[in-house]
Length: 377
Image 1 (tube, rainbow, N blue to C red):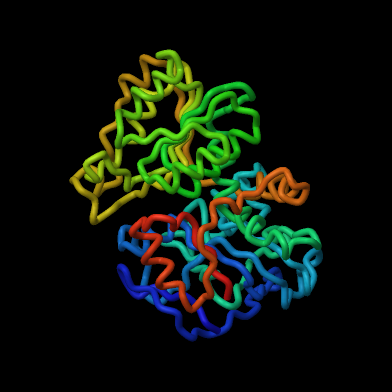
Image 2: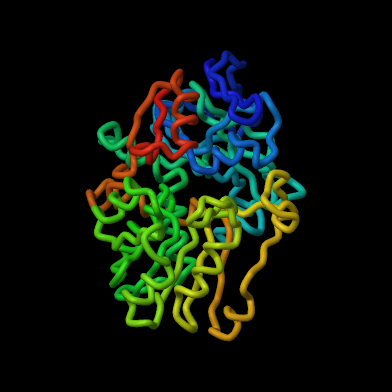
């Protein structure tokens, strides 16, 4: 089959690789019809996270079931399904509690596994013609019959839509409250969109890319361009000096300041300043245990200078971690099915699989207009 294969920093190629096969009786094989390039893929593409050459990338996958293992009971050949980026068993201590991002079975001795991702187990990704899905009955979310017309919506249920929703859940957002989202990439836009769906009173989105801020404004959020003035001051001005009730960090360890200098701690510390006393900050942007190409000694070890004193005196809470996609994807799928959500508004480009290297390159340099790239094998 054809697949997107990682060869090193800034080097992904579409190559022929062996077809996946059923390896365990609980496996499902998919013919992939839609898969996305995620911002998290760019960490590997840039060489900032360690993944071995030869791995197939891609953790946002949707397709048609073409084969099932002998122990699969619920999923049938011909079903069209989307698959969480988390690989999870469904029966370990964490999975039983709904914490599928921290599965204890799929990637021992670590808690958590994912398709085509550094440090998250041996699973190849789905930027390919076919994909093996372990624990198929638990992992596969079947799609309504009208799904071909909404395929670019449903594929967002694999990662970014649940992750954005997860940010609002971690933040404890309630109807009528204000929230500030740092980062207007796909996840930040999904966090803002989720906040609007949940009835937030005021949603503010901080970034400096005009195309991304324009999308935020189109869904009803207030765009805040930090290249024009301090983001913190703008948030305080919009909230009568009090700060937002809730905050969402959707940037991660490669955050930059106004001079385009990388500062891994800048959005976290800005959120402490932007959120009111006793507010809650959710962190869904990726932070890593180590980063050999980080700008300073601390962040190379996965550490940052964090304004804990201010956080403590303001009585704020911080919640972190990858999204437990299974906790949300069924509900978000149904919102799409009923016409209550259209997360595909973030999609700027749909490309054939052969053009994946171009998609990676353009998305990585944040070329204007490249907000989310969808691939069709």
